[in-house]
Image (cartoon, rainbow over all chains, first blue to last red; front, side, top):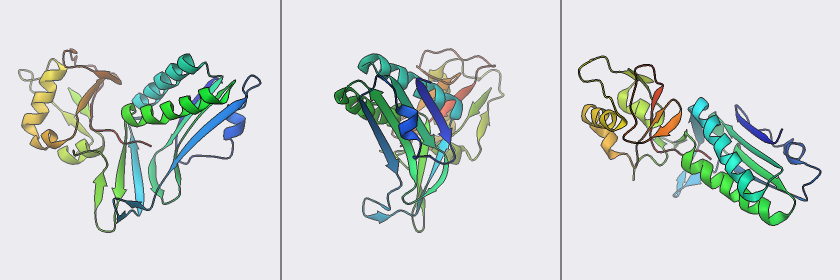
Length: 138
Length: 80
């Protein structure tokens, strides 16, 4: 499968090489985003991700197709987790495989940046005594 | 007309969907829907952005709304 898009309970980082490996690819790049324990000097205990799954899958497909066209990729993955995640849990994994490294580095950056701009997924931060939807307010 | 709510919009309305039943005032475009929700729930005006999806695609203000469409409020996204 050239494009692998998934919204999952838990990101499995162990199979990413198999998922992106391709006989015509000399380069594979992967970005994994995970839960960090602080934001703006405040202690984060967990994150909770909510998705509009049908639309998220559709938008991720569009982003993958754009990247394939732009960088002539052999394979693309976009996986995102939903539900509550603890510190150090992986929450997003994107990857690209191509003949040469420049294309997959650039494509990988495009995949994660565009996913954050366009894909309908919402993140709630859990602090010690309150919760906040990220990016909701200016 | 049923509107799906996610993230902070669910908290603002206090439910996971919003029903607009009044035939005379039912919004016919995305622009009218945005005005409707801003008037009814002024907290939407404090968000950093507000988009509407129709049948799981981002819609612009001129997009026409049909009763059978799947309509969703898309507050600022924050995946990744």
